[in-house]
Length: 624
Ligand code: ADP
Ligand code: MG
Image 1 (cartoon, helix red, strand yellow):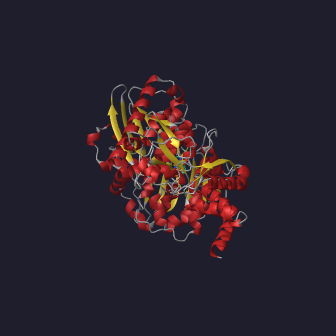
Image 2 (tube, rainbow, N blue to C red):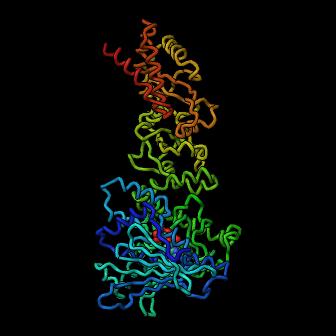
Image 3 (tube, helix red, strand yellow):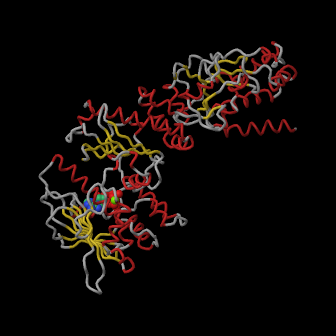
């Protein structure tokens, strides 16, 4: 081994460094937040290692962060040092961890940004955590000296001035952990001031879970307080906001903050958040889904996924219980009675808060549904037992919801006495289903229909056949029995074609469409539409046909029943043509086009552009 090795930074790191070194970003002080966050991560990893392994370097060292601004001579550059007693890094780890950007998301983001000149670097820095490299906003040179917790590893140093390269060499360091030695840029010398450093710790890192000491001060600079253990009435909104930011490095306010305490049936103090966005930022501090689980204020699991079902996996935060033992391992968590009670309490509370959000702040809830509705739908598909928990959270647009989202419960409340079932129409968009021919009989009877227009809705339909003892029915269901209508209204539709002429038209549909349909018959329900497609009763899993179309898997247009409106003007015209000019090419063209249009309306057409030549042909004939 040579005493000193040089390495080139990976391209994306160079790119990030370039941005950081040259940016005029105002909030330079975030570099400290990033370094403290890394130190805290390193100590959490140490904490977990020591739960099972005491054979480490310095097992009794206090897990704490120390920040110093040492005295320097008049014309020497000013310096600061940040030390931790975390897991440390070996020489190889220094090279990989501080020479690349691990997160593929971050890499892609930077690659994209490289091409896009309109991106403002300070937006990037402000919006995402930028990690270790942010230190180069204020440093002329950085020397990272580290010693791994592994007893046999030697100390090593990583040195860089933030340009193209870094070097790594052997170093003297007897104790475990990492020291970041920063030589400040001339215009960043203000940071070499303990009072200022304390202010920055307070501002950005107040809730870091290990003590942060600045200078010789015995008193810690951060409050390191378990906010979740305080009474909810004693916590200010601002404190929640700061806690959330410092925990997640998500700078968008959460959609919901849930803080509660309970002692029966199980002791629990919890502070939970529903983030505003499903996708975490590229350098988000929380690397996995799951809740932080504490017992007696000691972290025992950093990403616990047992307490909440998968479909609530987007919830982040802290659960602390004095009833679980400190050495509860991941395996016993599932089989443990206290954990089950804890899980029930936490889940119940989250569901309650979501319902409350829906009631008190429907707009905010709509945002939540937009972001996480699909997680809930996946939940229903993968965990049908959770139906009763999940379904009350569902929202849909409907033929009577006036552009607002509505719940199944609200739908039921609006149902007239005579209506026994819940109706839905499947399709690609609110606009297309609003004009669906299937809605004719529902409009005539003023019955509400839910619009199932999300790509996941067809997946969900096999699991969603009943809600509160009411069956859910697809409006294209051939066997649907709708409430009777007033006779007066029924009578209006009486300009139906005579039977013989109508049968002629039906015959032409049959010969033209042939094998593509199972049956052609008169419709009892259509009003303003000439035809519609309905599903044969015996068709299994018909909503899955749509799924296949979305997935583009060997999609074949399903065979449907064609129902024809005997009173529609277009069908009347067609009957006259069939009687007077049975060879007129317009007859077949019209039938084909009616069928294709119906497929499009159903969201079942494999490729609507195929219709264009026929439409042109029809237009030519119409304008001749
Ligand atoms: P992130 O923290 O999001 O992983 P960073 O750029 O902040 O990204 O840090 C890169 C990596 O360097 C960390 O994932 C960690 O492996 C390592 N690292 C940084 N600082 C420390 C430290 N104080 N102790 C141990 N490892 C560290
Ligand atoms: Mg980091």
